Length: 254
Picture 1 (cartoon, rainbow, N blue to C red):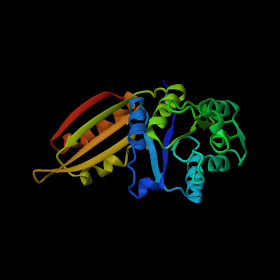
Picture 2: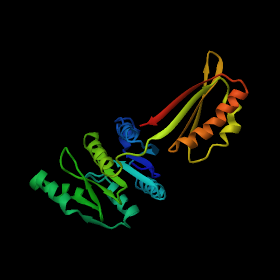
Picture 3: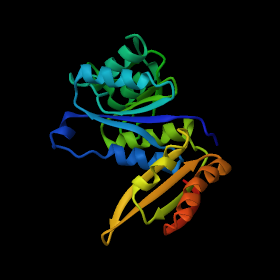
Picture 4: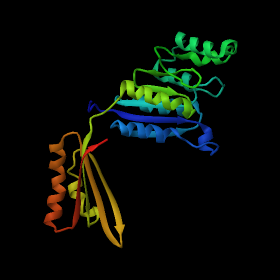
């Protein structure tokens, strides 16, 4: 296990998702797989098949030195499948080559029908590694052990996501997390909130129950003593002000 800082991004490419012709299944699947392993999304993008937009999004994610990206869609053989080309432009200075193993898989799967178009699905950015396609043996690929490119079909991409995570990001260290629900408003606790370190996961959620204001405070981190120390600032203040609250202690968030 590790507590290495990793920022997970998903990029879901498909105009048909934005115009309502299809519904997305990628985000929820990836998000659940990340949470099961103790990871969390940093951001998710659903974008149309636009080369400029794709380039800008990939560059944004590349600029984060702790980024890990899962990209869905656009690695087929049709003229509007731009992902391989844009991935090469952003991550390998536009250098591409046929991956011999990926070629062999396509030829084995489709025989003579591998040419002239399907074979191009083995034309990847240089130094690409393969992800297994359990449906038709046309590989997905990844770069630098952190940028993963999968098909737009969930039946193909989901197994690739699991393969990638199991191999390279199997499990993060579990976080220690504490909650309380206080019978006051967020405004009453802002001065305490300002004292929370940026590296701890802090959140406040206001609620109105039966016309009464309440706020749920959560704090999480990898070091129990540190979380307890800063969480105590809330409980001390609340007790001093005689504010009613309910405390919940959750030690392992998976």
